Length: 500
Image 1 (cartoon, rainbow, N blue to C red):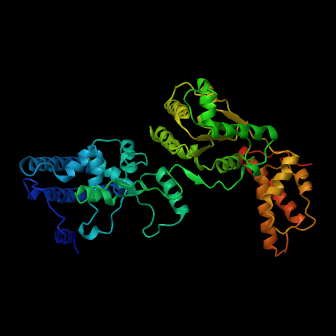
Image 2: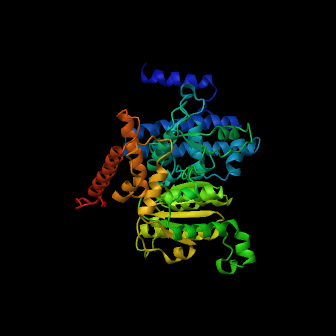
Image 3: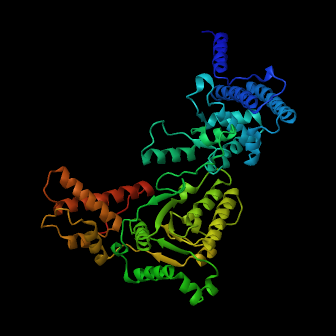
């Protein structure tokens, strides 16, 4: 089939379903249906040219098609306006776009994605890649690539109000939290690789078939794509802490449980102002129990625990990180949730002089966080693995600052006992006290050693877990720490085993 025959064949296919209307064939678009049919035909051509230019870049062709499509777009708008002035008033599509206060660029994206709905041979292909959409928008209006990308990010109006949705997940594959998380990460790292499609409610609303608004449905266990819900499966009594540290935690819990008495009857609001929420900082080496303590607090207060990593919040495009910082605090509006900000070093550190755009962006994020710390009514927990110089304004807003130390001998015994389940068959030669004395491990290292010993015993077909399994597991944990230390520093340390 030659090119000309194929064009005729495609046009006939479009005519069969009543979606095709050549803009050159009419003087006035007399109805909303005519407008949408003409818009579908026009934007289908734009998408096809954008796909071609994406894979076959040509400056000359790009400039030619820009002039052509911008002239055609003006004709489309003029004929639509003429029809609205002389016929039935504003079309349904016009009323929809105006009521939702969408700008021209957002309308173009919606109509481009709508052109994939029900057009002949493309009925099943409703998706368009971000790369093609960016190219198509550039054909229609003068816009930078970065500004075009902002129209498609997760924090953009088109995404947050669910006019469009990302469609990286394969059709029919609606299960698997790992798939969803991979898709979200890919979406954040590359808008170009993400595929988008128009939501069903938006299609119906444009056609005037329904007035239903989006439900803003969220994935199970998450209120926002930035947040990961953590199951608080740890009792506070299971968290091994120094006595004075645990006393500080319990005092904070009492303040939260009796906030009305604390603030009003005891008039602590004269010191704290109207702030209802609490903020705490947990610092310490990896594996010392920061996340475990957060779980214990959530269990004790019977509250939901959500975690967000600062690394996930950062977006390389101007303004998006600040928007993400504001959005993540929405989870605390009800006051029944705990927000765990993991790896929050960049938020906690002192603000630097605004010499560069990066400095200004980081300072804006810190300013947003400082403001939110005064307004929320829940519990915010910051964690950090390193010693940092706290911003003075940030330090003033932290109700409790705790450093979780590497456990001492008594604490290590308790942690070993806690991490070894009662159901785990132990050989009578296993000496918990000797393990605690010999290896100055953190809680995380002890957990890893127990798991490794159990795996080894099962692989060898043993009926129980012996002391030899635990000793081997501890040595492997030390070797792993040494390997990571060499990898990170580039120099081999003399001795990182730290046991007697």
